[in-house]
Length: 383
Ligand code: G6P
Image 1 (cartoon, rainbow, N blue to C red):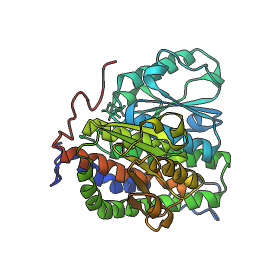
Image 2 (image 1 turned 90 degrees about the vertical axis):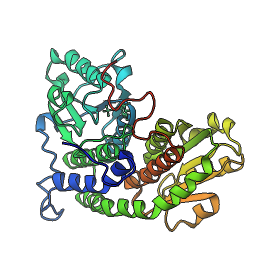
Image 3 (image 1 turned 135 degrees about the vertical axis):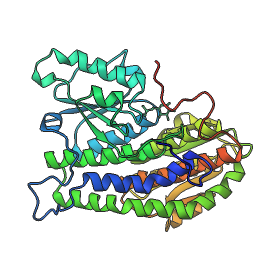
Image 4 (image 1 turned 180 degrees about the horizontal axis):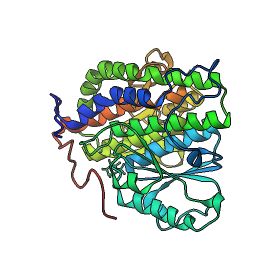
């Protein structure tokens, strides 16, 4: 099937705009439509179709991935640990291949790859499978794939998959495949939380209601923010370095914002946990280095604002990604990119969109080949 740009200048922009519908498709596919906490406590609200052998009695989770999929995996760790209370490790597949962590019992191993073809990820999963295969039952391999290519090599080598429903992605810089993977992790974390009763049914219902609002909220971000971001992109014609700060659930979004920008605009960008800025990146700051801080209301909000103020004291131009009605933020930041107010745990799904658009418009304005950036490939099938 030929995939067309449908009036968008680049596939990347089209795929950014596809995100609300991809999330709708995931919710339709995987939420149990009749579930209600009062009358359905025996039935899971989530319907990923995964077996008891995969999800029963999980004591540890280990996630292997590369690139943007590694960032969605970091969010997966946050969600599985904070919602389901299961210790979770995330490793670069290329590192794990040659230095696998010691084997732990009752471990769910998850390979995350949008293409399902990344050589390092496949090899890391094969290493994991082989070293467990001969061991007794509590060490048996349980390998789950998270991908939007159900026909891929990954899908054939693992026991079960979560199909993230993102469909084919053409732009080399991953966008819709990222948000779809993150959605897969919300659903998996909720399923595990339900099984382990680490959240009450009412808490689960609250998060699910929040998830159901996301597609419309993502549309609002696209509609309201794109013109503002296109305009803002003009300000960075000579910029050579960017710093992205985030904390907690939005730390992986800072990494992803930086990766998007460097992949397609060739501007050096670093994502950092905001609290670590004082241990290094602060030395880089001056009026020439813009700082993008993700400041979503929640447990780390005040901390991020005070980290941002430290950057401002070094003359950095401060761009805040925050919520619409936030007055504190409007005093702190030189520019603000806003998203609707949501529960902190859901905020990464909205915060990432202005960062995708910022990277896109800075690169498009420089006249660069956004969909096919130099030296990068959509999927890396060699080591
Ligand atoms: C390449 C792509 C990235 C992608 C990474 C992992 O480097 O350019 O956009 O995140 O591979 O790809 P995967 O298909 O495994 O998610």
